[in-house]
Length: 345
Image (cartoon, rainbow, N blue to C red; front, side, top):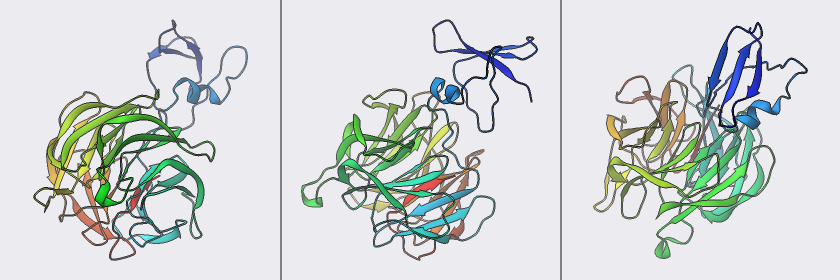
């Protein structure tokens, strides 16, 4: 494997990588790395923190081995299913409390379930878990449910949600942020463009997205940066206004799958796709195997998954490489898992 000298560029957001024999240069504005990268200069080895400090949040959101669906209405179960084969999930542990409509986040080593059932709790569990209970590691700034989760390389985000009893609630616009490197409370770092609940979350390597929600049903796709604490901007629309969809993320696109429209109330199958590279509207690229709401999403490097919700226990899978319908590839441990949170590794 080639070794590289690394030096900062001309003061802009660039790095210059030179092969150890001095023959090749690469000027990069961003860099995504999934394996081991050996960095050296001519005097001494660069610290291991150089990459994560210079390119702070460039870890891909997609998992390579497993998806998780944790909690749900009257459920504490942490479900785990493999990406390598189409099969049912297994029970590998429990959250600290049963919670409906929590947001899911993923670091490289742990899954997080934040909020749910109008609670503030942030639970954390190792992806190596085979039995046992997650740990309560902090609190959101406001208790809420039916919120969306986003993940950068170093932080988890929880956006929107229902923060008061239904009779008085129209939702929240808060974007909360908490660190993966230590166990701590979240901080309020910005606002969405609209007050919403029942939203779906997506993540690129540089931005978080919050799509759909309501009430009434909305088609808004909001985007906020990971590099700074700031408000979101409205960057496009879903193909139809809807609530309670599941969010998935490839390396190039965000997806919103399933959900319902209200008013009038009706369930939809639609899988929408919108690009990360440009701000634009989503397109309808396929259908789930059955209508559902209050499901959750997981993302491998090649497929999006939709699990749980009002299509009891089912795990749907659709490809990122082409626009196509989803197929039912397995089931969660329980036959009814309403409002779980999703994670992947």
